[in-house]
Length: 455
Image: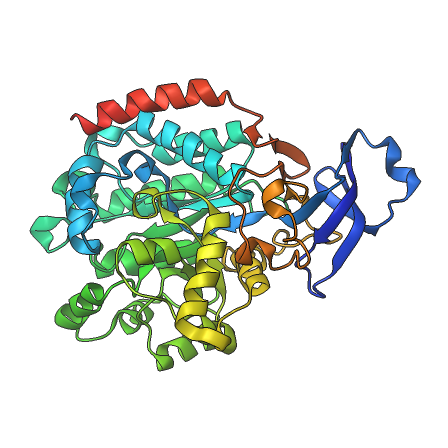
């Protein structure tokens, strides 16, 4: 049995069901599971295998990212797409993404998830849907291997596209696949990697890309397969008005009705973005417990709009937080997402906006729920020891920690965290990844970027 004790923690923000805040607290874990948490640790735990001094630190539950496109990490800040909205942005970048291979997947995953971890993220969901003809069949396998090297908890998706430009979709022909090949590989990945046990480090969701890049048949068949295998469903929805026009023109209904007619609604489904839902649609999401991954920075960058998060929370729509693709953010930093989300909704909704602590709970509790997890997302007995700590003694936090529950949103953290722990194992210490050589990984990544962009 592996045991760890973190003692003398200035504040523990638990995000638990009672919203407990402990002062001068401790966390004791066995084999990655929290066994004791509270104030003034019992001396019985002082002989733990690892004892960490948390003096001056504030501990939070590990952040949970509910929507990402890690492969985009190598196409950030490209001048040709900076003033585009989603459809034109996608069509331009697909001409680069059609050259994605295993090297891009490996190093974008290492660097993208590495950045997430350095800013407090302990679980990442990635939505990968680009499978170029020449890239082989193991891109998701490569991602899981990268996650294992880093020590991050990963939910991957078997994304897909079967509508290319010639079929009325956006992507080039070389990155779409047949329904049969998609379903076959989906089954393979679920059978090989999906672990539904408590504390699992690997899970799979089925995730056709979007209504404008996949067929109705693929959506229908994916839903049937996912439910037969006991995995969740995910896609983009209601992100732009262009998408709304697309489904109205082709199917005569708005995006949510289109998806609901294909079986894509329920507590095993979550949508990325969800900006352009109307009131009746929000009520349907609440009634069916269908989730939404909120991506505020990406939505601002692409001028897509502002999701109606205050209304969603009032109606009890399940909501999580996400960074979205690196190329529409252009970062992988959930701490930044927390602060921007807080400020965006304060600007747009004034006194009805969620509080700073509400946003933190979206990034922890809320995100866990839409991923179907009840073992992460808070610091309490029986939950996994997934957490991060920030140094309250940092000069930039002087006078800022009187309300540690809201501090991440109202003040924000501008540098990597002091410690990130996943399942009781330290993955980031003093802002540095512990499982990989950052400099060597970055150096190889730069070469991979050059190769990708000159093709």
